[in-house]
Image (tube, rainbow, N blue to C red):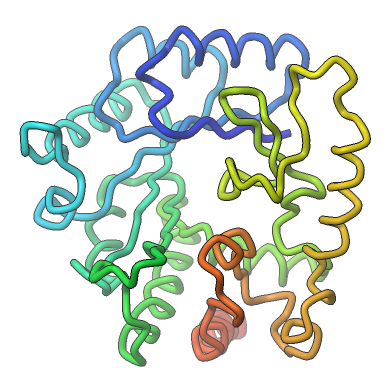
Length: 295
């Protein structure tokens, strides 16, 4: 069971404590992850994280010159230095942490960002390209050189993980585990089938990316008869529409179990085609095969 608290949960640490303690009381082995901007960390929070074995993921978009262009305080100051100081506190307390990075046109090349982040030695780095309906100038243009850079960097991350035990990227780790287990699933990530998201008002949706999208509303935990007919009707619907073989493009695609597309983002942004370039999957598999064959 995996609970993900996002937004800026540490602004209301009392609520975070309440939720965590109640979940742990009911499900002692529950995995709880807090995604934070990393600017609010103190000794009480760090002690709580250690005591309850909570995973902390910090949003950091690369080196100072990149991050501070994208994430500033209200007074215009960049937040990079504050975050790095707080990461140092975590390291001093031997608290493992992950990093979440949003990729933008400010620096579309993954290699530069990864080389900087791996020096911090996070256990995992999650890279996500920025998404926007309005054709924002921050959107990364997936040119051949960008795709090649991303794929090569993912493999470097995999090698770093094997050699040093840190800084693996979530996508290459997921692909490796899929190939290593020799198992495939008809559901890309389990949204609405094995995973659900609960909004702060108690509303339930298939994943955090679809919070507030009423077409995907599954009910509320505050309703006396939850889970009710609405929940199970939506569950049956999601079992169908989120199945890889439901989509015609996926059904006939050789990489349908490997591409790691995000259905939620494609739904939100109205995409009718797979958001993961075929050449990217090809390069990842090629580079990964070269490593495994040598090993």
